[in-house]
Amino acid sequence: MHPCNTNSHLRYFRYRIDLVDKVLVKLLETRIKVATKVGRVKITLSSPITNSSRERQVISNLISSCMAVNILKVKDLREVWKRIISISKRSEGHSVTSFYGSPGSHTHSVMDSCFDMTTVSFPFSLIDETPFIIYSSLNTRLPFRNNCSGLLHTALATMNNHNVHIQNYISHCISQHLVLSPSNRYILSVTQTHAYNQTKQWNSRNSHTMYTIMNTSKAAKVSCICNSMLSISGRSIITKYSIESLDPIQDRWNNKTSFLELQRKGSRLYICKKVRYILLTHRTKICRDMLLLLLAVIKQNIDLLESGVVYYKRLLLLLCKRNDKLSSKALRMISISKKVGFYTNNNYI
Image (cartoon, rainbow, N blue to C red; front, side):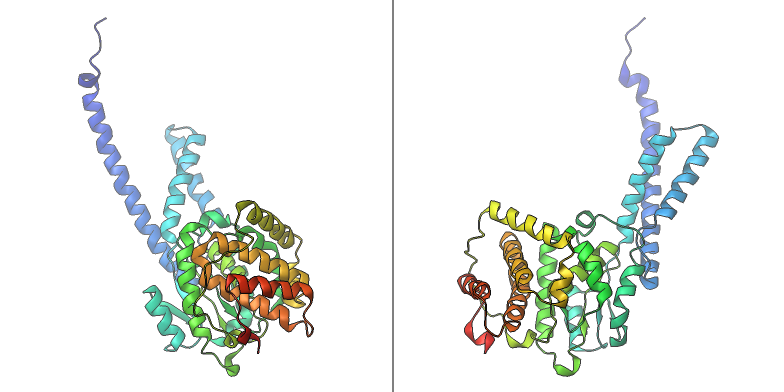
């Protein structure tokens, strides 16, 4: 038998395979374009991005077709198409920015200038319907940390909103999104900075207004509400302080070990469903634990400094307001705050 010249014998077949691959690439590109159009329709219908039943239907149809002509193994085909569908889903996840307020308001102009995309306005009357909007978009569960990348996924202020449905839901979900992924830090910081600038202009007549930045992604909506409830704005206290300049954080939570300890402590706190007690009773111990955890998170994610301080000062002010005679623990928290530059005396006059 003569030695085989691989190149000469297989050149023709490789050429045919290359042609077929080009056709496959064009077909996949067409599929992704259609998925993008599907995503645009879902935005108008407030439909969830992921539909597991539809995914199973697509794969089942493909397997049936391939079995009819006896090509490819079912297991291999299923895995390949799961990956292809997941790529298409990314195109469906088209972001939309929305807020509760009136069209043409200051909020609307801030949103337009900040995100350079069409913003959707919801009337104030829909505030009470928020939990039902959330639930309707959460038909299936998504891994939080792997599906929030690049999405607008935060809310800053929920003024005087004590909806028990949101509180109960948050106690289950908040532990899964303690630390933000690096890809989301910038958008979170920008979002909350602009939201904070807007909230300073609110007055008592619209103190019940809910300022929320939402995304059509289910994971984004959940983390949006998580961050909203973290703000703990049970009172209209946002106008009592302002953020001007902050010293670099230098505190006793600098080292990684301390942060991990606080994170585990915070996780246990959330998992045992005590978050709702913060919202309902603002117990001193839990507020203090939240403050410690928040300081650690801000320290790890320096990009969250400005937005994180808003949360921190609200919690601290709420903690002080709940105690006519400040406890030693609360006083220690104020002392810590002075060291990290989060507190000034005139904030509590």
